[in-house]
Amino acid sequence: MDKIPILRMGQFLLVTIQVDLYDRLALDLEADLVKMVSKTGARGILIDISAVSIVDSFMGRIIGNIGVMSKLLDAETVVVGMQPAVAITLVELGLPLKGVYTALNVEKGMDLLKNKIQLDEEEEIGPDDDNSNDLTE
Amino acid sequence: MDKIPILRMGQFLLVTIQVDLYDRLALDLEADLVKMVSKTGARGILIDISAVSIVDSFMGRIIGNIGVMSKLLDAETVVVGMQPAVAITLVELGLPLKGVYTALNVEKGMDLLKNKIQLDEEEEIGPDDDNSNDLTE
Image (cartoon, rainbow over all chains, first blue to last red):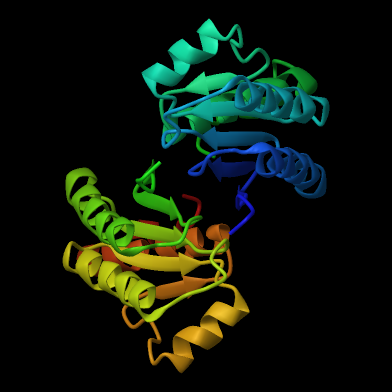
């Protein structure tokens, strides 16, 4: 079990971090995620860190990197389930996770991603499109 | 990190197993899942075991138990992402995971659950209902 599984769910990729992200594991996750975005054409990444209670600057930087890298591949990153102590530590470390969105839980994160993607598509199609109110999928 | 996070996604609960399920962790997961089904009224449980390469009879039994327990609470269990070696081991151990559905990946597992739930609802409403062909959600 030396790899964090990446689950594909429609246009999104879902990762739950349950183990300590030591160096190689974190770098592997970063590389795997970017490869997977490129391979599947995913439009969003959800990273659930609800099981993470301790964070260090390395992990903060890796999450930030994933956000920036996936943005270059036209995918948004949402970090969900952050524990309050982790938020405090990240700010104290001077790592406010720029380029990464956050949401309280997976459901809210998924709604956020769906809205982001829809906004992008509306901009491409134009504001007068018939589907602009279709929020059902 | 001594708890496996359970993610709620609409009517379903999603669990990814990434660490060795030693005794207490497995029993905690079993209890947490059943509590969560009862609390949220979830209709399905998705257990992703794509990161699991070694399985023993205890883990096989726990997964079977989760299936039976959640069935009692009117929720179906789908195990997804099983590695071929795990399937071989489970059969050789005489644990064919009765009462648990399986699917190749999370997307297919979710489709399976949606179909199951829809069939249940159709049976409750009756076969002449207008929504019987509505597969869009």
